Image (cartoon, rainbow, N blue to C red; front, top):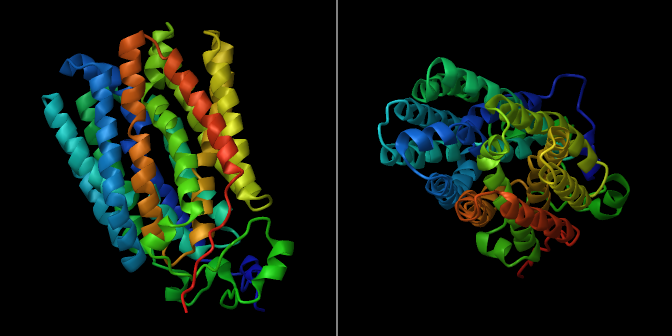
Length: 433
């Protein structure tokens, strides 16, 4: 057996250890969700009121976090390639937890921003979705879509529970003790499982990706691949230098396609709670709207992952952007509560694809051996774009006293990304003789 389809057939009926890695990734993604903009959005109104700052200034904090996270992503990606994710996830989780405990004791916005930009941002870069996804990509090839989807459902699970969980804690305890509770939960979820179960690659344990009986070789894959795989997959053992990756069209198309859409995603994540309450709805309605979005982020990734194993991933990405744009348009077209829920329901389905499809494309296009350094470099650029989202929404709100213009621009960005998705093609590595 010499072709890529070997990875689809397990070596035996025994449980493949890679699914344990997926389970730990699910827990790590839940823990990482406490640092997300959607979680921070729940604190936006009480924090801006207590610390006497505008929404625009508060939004700059999230941009600063994105920029710092982007800057350290190439280093973190290189560390994952060299050493695996086991200790990175454990240490990062402990750093984040310390940050959450400190957030429960701040008295000024300067202190709050310092803790978020150091402990929380740097720790989350070490234990967040990039590290988790790179680790999982080492263990799977043909089943990579469903594996990444199952792990990413941890984010959706957390987002479903987070609005009501955080809102209830703030009512009972206040916003400062709520951060301390977040710190304790983060430690419990990720440190132990990472140290006990995470391993660098299947080869380190005598396995092969997907539980295949034999190593996956690509020397005779081309003809058979057209029959067995809807998505072109390059040799997963190719090593890419950063400069080589940056000279490919695929690298820049991936960065731009998902980067420009992420500007709106990060902006909406931070401001959606305030948008709904500004329409006149009570905070609990805003919390349930966020839960609707999160429910679809929980329910839809597996469907997107399975779809990506049956059609070209770039086509699935195009569908994801279109569904997201349609949902956003419906949600902001009227103040009607039904349309609000229905629109963000569709938006959440599309957003669920963002948790899976770009990770599959990066891994399929640049392989397992250099995924950390290439993905980290891509995040450096795309996260820099995403950093513009929160202040863009915040300052446009301060200027126009509403979110209509920023949401409309976001919709245009989603349609642009849909067209760019269809232009994606695997890179060709130039071999010098």
